[in-house]
Length: 165
Ligand code: ADP
Ligand code: MG
Image 1 (spheres, helix red, strand yellow):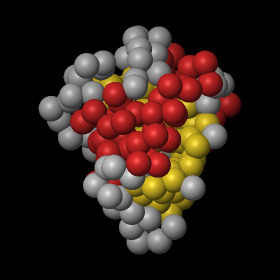
Image 2 (cartoon, protein in one colour):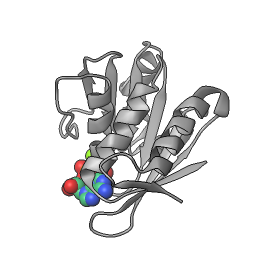
Image 3 (cartoon, protein in one colour):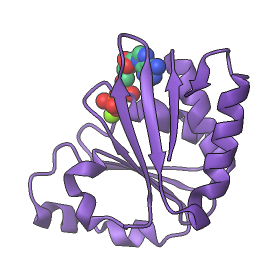
Image 4 (cartoon, protein in one colour):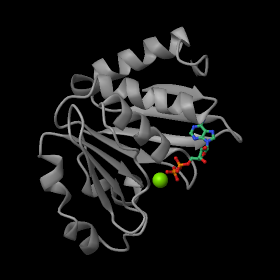
């Protein structure tokens, strides 16, 4: 488990970019946190780190967005889903196995339906511009990514806005 605190949206995007640099095909990042916690902001950084030319937004009316990058990014937002059958209609399994990177906002709403060996990222607001990110996932799959995050965070190298406890 790894905990990182950022003190600006830009620092959060930098965290996402570090994740993306260490992303491998099939990685799944499950984001949990209230409205405004920073799930989409983190996703923007992930897309930037994958070399995407677009800017990720919360998929408001669609539940899924797809972006080009070093790896293809599949971005889901489960906020509006009301039932397990709606979730199944998304056909998320196909995306999970498509060899890209999947980022799922509000993953906690359907956590038991999603892969148990994914990277869970739980986000809390600590105030207007501070956010706490807690990362947990199987070491064999996400150890490299978390080590890299920890070393960048402890160096506080990124915009001076990243620190870890
Ligand atoms: P979510 O997708 O979780 O609902 P968003 O990423 O869309 O949240 O929005 C996060 C909001 O919080 C944005 O308005 C952003 O500017 C603000 N914010 C303030 N501080 C931070 C931070 N440290 N990290 C991320 N977002 C932050
Ligand atoms: Mg969002």
